Image (cartoon, rainbow, N blue to C red; front, side, top):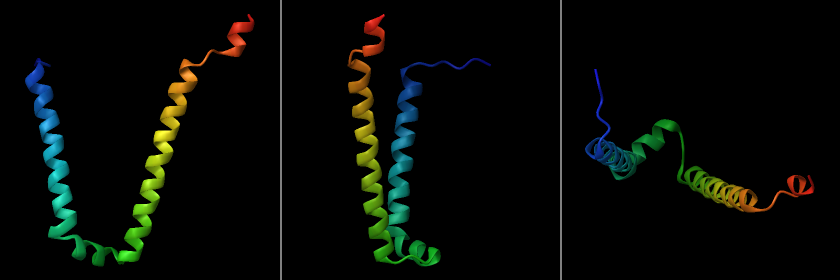
Length: 82
């Protein structure tokens, strides 16, 4: 069995990913969001705290990514001494 990795394959994967993300957002948001939170025993205050932690994680990961790029492009002092 051979799989052809052409442009249509990758477009289909990207479209499926976006569609599943949108459906999940609707499912856990306006459609069943309150019932889902009640089943988990969460309140709006808990959800706000989780959003703040999520934003902190995003900022941290972006900062680490920038640091890696800068560090990768900076000259290495150990290698320059050799």
